[in-house]
Length: 157
Image (cartoon, rainbow, N blue to C red; front, side, top):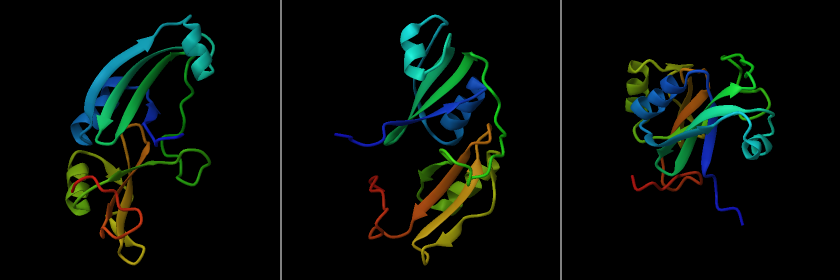
């Protein structure tokens, strides 16, 4: 039985910067730090890489964890930090917010870049916009305007 999503993972070239962003700007809680050295066959098998090594951290954001990796070996390939959201594969994470306009202004003041201010969608039932973290990963912020909307996330707000 699948219970739900436990965590998302982000690979970075700047471990401390991305942890600081998700903790200090987004509001995640730092949980743990670890990693592994080259030659660990269990990790190599699990991640499907040969001679891998990395540092890793786990952050908690309310109902989901964010896992951060900085791989040392094999040498990671850089991807275009401005990949479009229509490329195949995982395209973005979405953060459910209360008072999207205040959160948008707070995140802009913290240096986060957005495509546009929040807009209304689905006949005003959803307000949302896309921005990017310091590594260029796409983050959507959204506010569901009605508790009766099918995608409403009951987080106690």
